[in-house]
Image 1 (cartoon, rainbow, N blue to C red):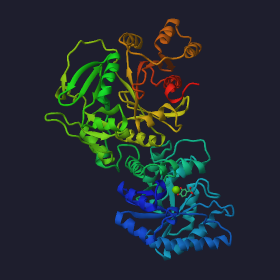
Image 2: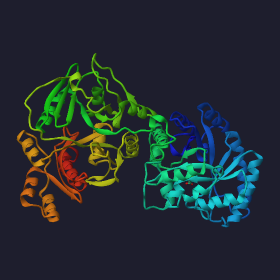
Image 3: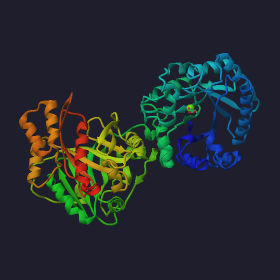
Image 4: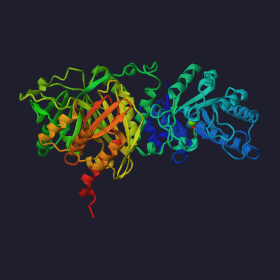
Length: 618
Ligand SMILES: O=C(O)c1ccc(O)c(O)c1
Ligand SMILES: [Mg+2]
């Protein structure tokens, strides 16, 4: 596979774009003409840069408003084309992308267009160049790839071919089946983009909301299967118009693009490198590690204790405590010269690492490496375990362990104490807050590495703006991640980012088999929870006609409730620790969701608690 990307897809000046694209591992680029026009360097400079970087220029694009023009525009269009052929010769590319005409003066007629292309083909051939015709979904006369192909067929010229773009094919809902009847050698270029399903005019949708394959809702894999059936062997070129992508780190965007090409199609993927063929199953969260300063450690331990955790181990060589309950292990790390300490110094107290159980760590690490995830290593004491890790959200770590291999006694001296009845059994989900612009990238990261499915995105009303949430979970629910982001500056999610100096874990939910008993015991042990207004319970009662005793118990404990077709859900929240992160306790009675209808009630309560600090009462 020749992996290519159009320069329009990432931000920066042309020379920076080319360097970033090459560093991410692409073989080729489409030079977007505007990037060249704005660049202060000659075509030969660009050719030389590409040569030095090992990038082939697979096309110059776009050449607009060509076919079906009346005179004098027709003559001008041919003159313009000759000028671009000159440019192509200097750039060292043999393919010009002509997109379908959007000019109001252009005329329809398949044969008229075919004649124009035949003549352009003659001129291109004289210079050893080729021209590809692409139907824009909003073209004045040609907006369907099937018409573009018919024009190319009738132009009947070896230097004229068709260019297929997944967005222009899939966004208007054109069937992909007709692609299969195009001979592969008449397809001069394939461009790939995905997009979220939006109810928007197709031009705005295309120019602002395209994303990399797999990041949206278009059936790009179906499109690719049809392309494969033609025998096409040319470049697959990402072409993403997205203002947000151009505003982000070009390196990250280029890597996201490369990952999307590597993961293209349904796995196992014939074209994928061996390291990519299998995606490791995640079978649970082995531990969550908090990096805190010594002044906070006792407070966090106290909070854990209140939630029913007991101290079960002390690290042999570092200031790390292990607190456990059910299958949950929480580590409090305040050792110096450690990753936890540097995380603390950057972000303040918070989750610095998550340990995940995966079937096969070696396979997982080679997959991570192939996908350009950053591996992380740190020194360990003599005889201590080295746990492979990769960089995750906000520079935190994801440790990878095989199930049952977390041999705690190797690194920790067990602390034996009373064996209290477990109030909590497992981690239900982990919620991470991030910049809105990062969300697609982290979503792709998790889905690329782990066998997780994306649920449809949902939106939650925060008193001070809107928060978008995306759930990623594995088959049996032993890994559930909730990604949150908001563009509004004062939402809880955004304030977390500014106070945490970046993305990170905002809350962890623990599962209980009996939330009422657990919360009673926790309250008796000194734990306190977010208080929920009476109005909420009155509304619940009106909606669900709950048993009065149950409702009273929920009200007493600040427990929230939701119900769906599959079952019932109870949830309660702790106050935020040092105004940073908080915990949730949930009980699922067959329910599969996350209590989304309650999120705005929770956010309002948290905002009320935070208000004296951020918004003085008047
Ligand atoms: O939005 C456009 O104008 C445009 C230009 C060139 C392309 O290849 C394309 O898909 C869209
Ligand atoms: Mg295109």
